[in-house]
Amino acid sequence: MSERRSYTARDPEFAARVAASFGCQGVMALLGARLTRIEPGLCEIQLPYRPELSQQHGYFHAGVTSTIADSAGGYAGFTLFAADSSVLTVEFKINLLAPADGDLLIATGRVIRAGRTLTVCELEVEVEKEGRRSACAHGLQTLIAVADRPDRPA
Amino acid sequence: MSERRSYTARDPEFAARVAASFGCQGVMALLGARLTRIEPGLCEIQLPYRPELSQQHGYFHAGVTSTIADSAGGYAGFTLFAADSSVLTVEFKINLLAPADGDLLIATGRVIRAGRTLTVCELEVEVEKEGRRSACAHGLQTLIAVADRPDRPA
Amino acid sequence: MSERRSYTARDPEFAARVAASFGCQGVMALLGARLTRIEPGLCEIQLPYRPELSQQHGYFHAGVTSTIADSAGGYAGFTLFAADSSVLTVEFKINLLAPADGDLLIATGRVIRAGRTLTVCELEVEVEKEGRRSACAHGLQTLIAVADRPDRPA
Amino acid sequence: MSERRSYTARDPEFAARVAASFGCQGVMALLGARLTRIEPGLCEIQLPYRPELSQQHGYFHAGVTSTIADSAGGYAGFTLFAADSSVLTVEFKINLLAPADGDLLIATGRVIRAGRTLTVCELEVEVEKEGRRSACAHGLQTLIAVADRPDRPA
Image 1 (tube, each protein chain N blue to C red):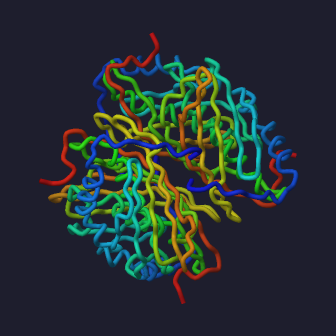
Image 2: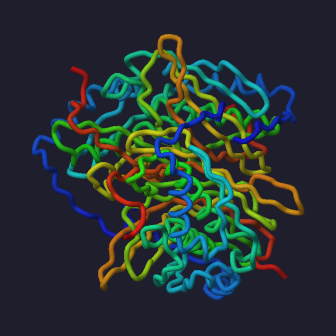
Image 3: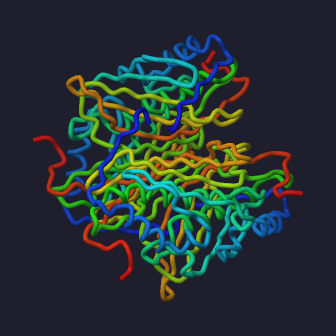
């Protein structure tokens, strides 16, 4: 993006709300992903490598990369939603720029358009190998805010 | 697609080659995915529900849906590749048509354009609930064939 | 798509409503595009070749292909909307499967998911050369229905 | 993108090569688009409003927005290619962030990954209204370099 916009969360408890929702995503625990940064309009998720996360060449599987990118974008958008609403991914597109060959994946979602119904996020994933980070995926995602619906099952 | 094209695999061992590669994807075992159908230009992967695969509302996570859709498309393309080549996902886009609420996900990848370098696949995911299947995701994927490179680590 | 779904338009005047909106799209006249088929959940647009529509090799420009594909999808969705609503494209993705080398482009949009707010369409474009049609582009599009807003300027 | 990378063109005549190719795109003249900026890995195209470029509400048509975004990305990539190669769009995805309501469209393509075969670009489109610019579209595009093929018809 040309410039980074700054956003204000209307729910002051946005960080706790995101953390609670993240804790309800079974797949984040299964993969071993951690919520490492949460700000209005931004979310970062990290995932250390394990052979269980691989595709056939031993790199992180594109689907794993996509899974944490999708959650990072979803929670970036969710920081800006009303407290009683819920977030769903409408669609996303991701380019795998390079093999995700490394020890750690870092996915960052950033809101680039916050609308009443639809929110659009940019997704970036870097891979860290021997202390050096490089871009491995870049995506674009559309989210929908579902009003008056708690984000977690009762 | 208007009509389904039929393809011929140039490597008669394509099914064994796909199965061997699938067996090397650590994440397929971690999720519990099964390779259930393999034909020239087509691959189907099934994944039974477990709470470990969920997003915050308890449905299959969009990233999990995307992961098996990505592998189904990748292997659909791989059936048509030369024996000594390898497959990588260039990019994919997926629309989550409905919450993936059910007991079983069924992802099908179908080649819609087989090129020398690039192959394009259509991705469809259905969810089965109480014996009834319905569409839950639809995607489009670009693959690249990497020549003279074995698909698995030595 | 596995099977083609059939849809019912809630507005019996859907065909006239689409034709009137199409007539208001200045760019369709500029390109020379014609609305050739309109059914509930489906729209076809044809565009004869002219050098003014070309990219640098003389084929139809990918943007021209995308323009009629976008309108075909938008109107496919619009056939199913309420009479007093309006349609906007949220996003689309298109794969250019082969150079659009021929005398005529035929773009078809088909609804694959009709929701209250969001509608998803599959986009297919064929090119006809010396009487023979072949696929040249395939896409996926998300539309939003804007309620209580006439589709055309007063 | 987190940081803007800087690129070096291997063909010192890249700007003349892009301008010549742009001049061969019939559709750029038909729309009235102008090549306004060309640097290694970057291209900007501007398009003043005319009613002939409109969708049904009078705004720039999403396809028109996409057309100049596609060319801006294509030429951003082309600046980095070898002199005797050609560029084709493999696919692109674009989010229409807001109605393109204004007097001028400005599309910028930026290379975010330059590979031997495939190049990935980020596409941004702004609309200017009464002297003020705002984002109206954001996209992601994959290009392929076709070696040993002149970019223009003989």
